[in-house]
Image 1 (tube, one colour):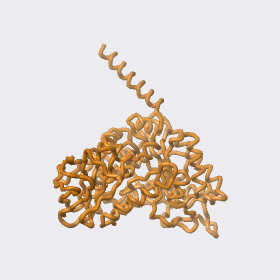
Image 2 (cartoon, helix red, strand yellow):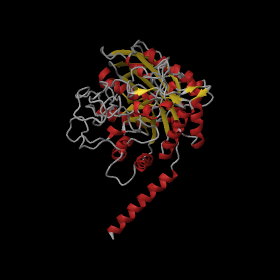
Image 3 (cartoon, helix red, strand yellow):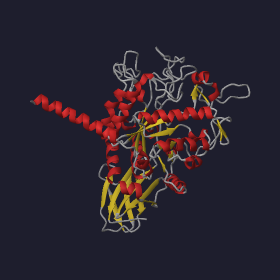
Image 4 (cartoon, one colour):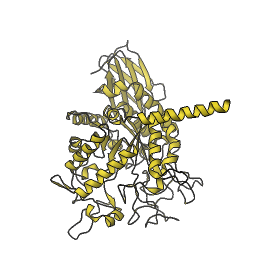
Length: 514
């Protein structure tokens, strides 16, 4: 009888999951445009790789990251509050003139196929079905999925389809900047697009939409013409109006990586139909004055307000192209990034490994390899950056407490979603140059965030001007320097001590600052 009960329960669960998957409707675009996306970047081939001998590399007899074993980690991400995955490119990688022993994920040998190494060899499902299962399991947990669209092609792809590539006067394919493992696509221009390349990109859109992805992050979107993107986005939106397009583009990017490449700036990309872009939040590593952070927030809000349709930006404080924040200013900077992502008018954005303070420093990095799958027999890496080039172990660090902070902050982002998606953004003047402060208000609630960009000197006493606040207002500590917070109130002023590199967040009821 008990056995029948469990069989019935199992069937019920399976039918429920099947029904959920059948009724799933993509809502990522709306989530993103309201700054409610909490995004984690993952590289599937390392995401849940099984490094059993702990040497940092996935050897031939060890299990690489796959669509199937990635499912094991989804509950962990859900618990941390992640509601969107940004999956790095899933295409097969080039083997000729490659970098690293697996080839860069941004050096595709095809845009219309899936990397066979992402398949679980023990599964009876074909690779497309495995990809669909992974995405369905994400959706079952309320996690949306963006896939990364590479901007260039591998040398292998050039050999197979030379008509897709730009060439110099000697008919040599172009190496953009120092990206020696890729060649520049020939996109044409706004008046005369390369239709062969555009068709390949349409086929890519068809493939990822059929697999169930909810959106695309376009790598180096700036090196394709406005019309190219406008047409492609329109093509995708005819199939799914809620399909997201995120441009890797920044206001600080002002020229292409090659004289042969076109250049479409971030604002023109937004005009072409992209829903959002990166901004330049990664410059936090160079900011020493609170006004620099505040001014960038104001700048982004002005830019986004110029468009008739809603647009948004991600909190690109740390990306897979950036040095680990742990190496820059330790876990204090990581804590600051967590709470800035929560309280600023941005979509939260993190890289796998960030939640444990991964440094991305590989002891085997740039050393000769025992085994390679490309023509490069060295473990090529960028020191301190997310590995894109090898079958390396899943990224982990020594600061496990960051995951708890991430989880708490993400819960607050959900609890106070009205404030963070619809609320005002009001800079608050303060007495210290290195300190920033701002208020977010909606209805009768205000959240104040205060941070110190001086990571080296000792604790500072700071006075923050908070309009309309008086002694009758009670402050709740969402994030204090020691988990509790220590402050004094005076009329229109908040006085507190703020340690080096610290960030503090307070909730005030019955107060609105516009």
